[in-house]
Image 1 (tube, helix red, strand yellow):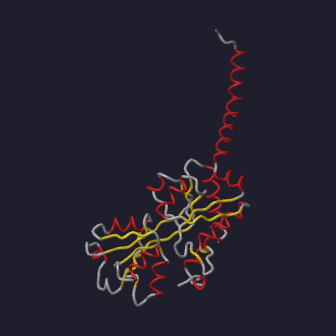
Image 2: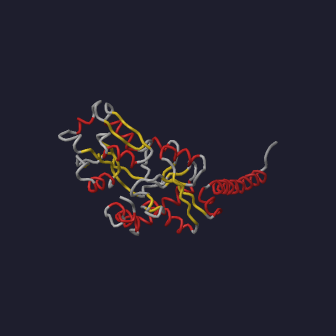
Image 3: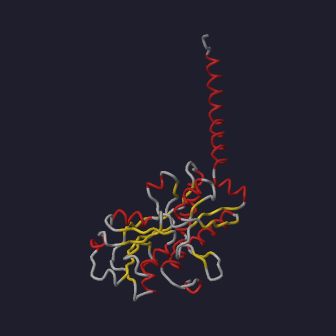
Amino acid sequence: MKLTRRMMMGLALATGLALPAAAQDARADLSKASVIESIKESGVIKIGLSLFNPWSMRDKKGDLIGFELDVGRKLAADMGVEVEFIPTAWDGIIPALVAGKFDVIISGMSITPERNLTVNFSDPYAYSGLTILANTAMTKGMALEDYNKPEITFAARRGATPATVIAQLFPEANLLLFDEDGAATQEVLNGNAHATMMAEPSPSDEARKNPETVSVPFDQTFLATGEGFAYRKGDPDATNYFNNWIAINWKNGWLKERNDYWFKGRDWADQVDQ
């Protein structure tokens, strides 16, 4: 059938009207799938975290305190919702997020390509690096390359970035894995491991608390990276909101002020058991 000019104009007009409608439907579907919309509807943001000082820890009354708790509470307040923190073992925290146990991970998680295959990350809301904490007596006189020997034992938290970095930098050494940073540190304090690796300021804090036993032997930072919010893939709405929130709170100084309080000082130390 030969199309007249009037028919062609009508078809073009109909097509032009259909495209915006389809785009609106697509945007509506994306909005429904967004964790931000889910949080707004439920009135609660569920945040997964793993306990390690001073990112997140329990005070003497058993309440959760730390940098992550400040970040999560302000994020919830700015969204106009309540907040629920869900402590989770580190090696299971990403699977728990993917399974929908919580909405977002805010737990000092370093942004890595490997993790990015499973989750999306926001822009960094904090920056840190790793240093070695060593048993002073057991490592006296050792150079960095001496740590890469079969007779050397490292301890680290299972599934965390330091465990990966230790395995990469010191493949000949033994590596003991634990569910918490505290257990790995205790192995070094007890003389059952030569060293561990953690994000600052934890190693320097431990050295100050136990100067007769442990030390930070090298003025060297490993894998200085940024930490981001982690959330389920395929959610551009969450990326937009989280990145904007982080940018605003870097610009107004709030994130820096909270980071300095928890990581550069010890005013909070009397709130927790030493």
